[in-house]
Length: 97
Image (cartoon, rainbow, N blue to C red):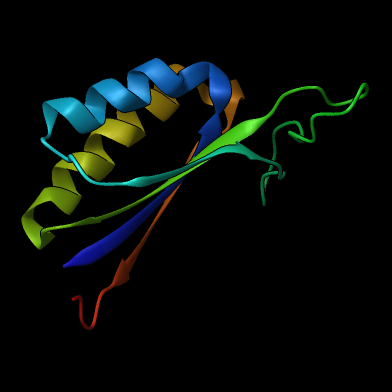
């Protein structure tokens, strides 16, 4: 099992949900409002008058074989919407209950 953490501009909520649905990722936890800035470039998403954009974030625990297709789909989405600033991270899950 792997943990997949996604952070993305709220404007991408529908495409992100479509990817999760298409790849049959049913369970996840979503934070509606998260703030941050990219480690390389892009505009900050702070939800302020100067930087009004906001992010959402999702954490999903998925089977190992789904990680490749999920990351590929999110890479394509990020390439199509480069200025929106999406990021994905993967961790190993030791145990679940």
